[in-house]
Image (cartoon, rainbow, N blue to C red):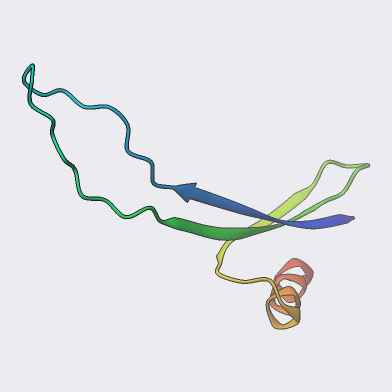
Length: 72
């Protein structure tokens, strides 16, 4: 099996908005970046796959949890 981890994220981004002609609408915002990690394993011969999503970090303890869940 091949194993990999990947970070998925979302960046808040505010664009144009509608307002009266001559008025400028001010929108207070704070740009944020939120992400989660996805662990995946795929068997290239059979196509069997296993995924775990929702981890906040990548480290040895989380990788161990993924491998234990994969063994089950």
